[in-house]
Amino acid sequence: MIWESTQIFSTEYMEIFFSENSIEVSGTVIRLENNIPSKSHYTISLDPHWVVKRLHIENSYNNKELNILSNGKGDWFTENGDEILELKGAIDIDISCTPFTNSLPINRMNWSKNVPHYFEMTFINVPDLTYKKVKQRYELLDDVNNKRKFNYKSGTFESIIEVDSDGLVTDYPQLFKRRF
Image (tube, rainbow, N blue to C red; front, side, top):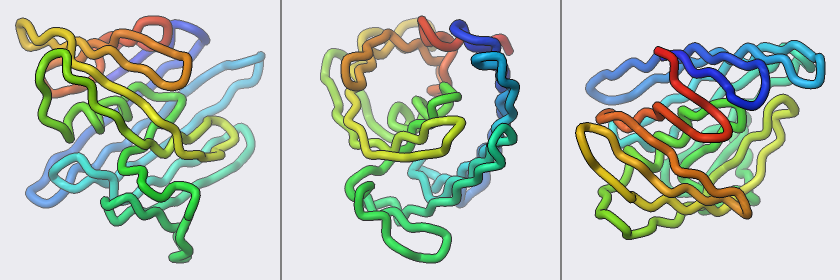
């Protein structure tokens, strides 16, 4: 899958692999922001129900790296096993440089039209790889011809996100467009 940013020069190549017991995702984002080139690479391990178990992300611009683990029940840990208390309650992740992570709550939940779902998310800011817990809302607006549209809200930001029949983003107005 290839996404392109509609705000800055940025392109992502992402692959997703399904097995009986897990879903493995690997993505590389090449970007130029404020005349600074960078490459971010992430891998996400999910259980078969789209629940995050592990995230590894690294950024070439500042040579930063982040590894965090989850038990899938809202508890997060460093790679050394220390609990990250400020993330308690978050199930999903939201990585700022990719639209893929919007697919996590979309694919994890059962949806009915016009019924909002509220999520606590682990938001990871790229390129500095800082993280914090944020609240987000998704609401299914339309489900026609293997395309679904969701109203997405995080803080004061709001957008209509379109996904394909696999729950993967095809259009995220103001931010991303899928090219392949």
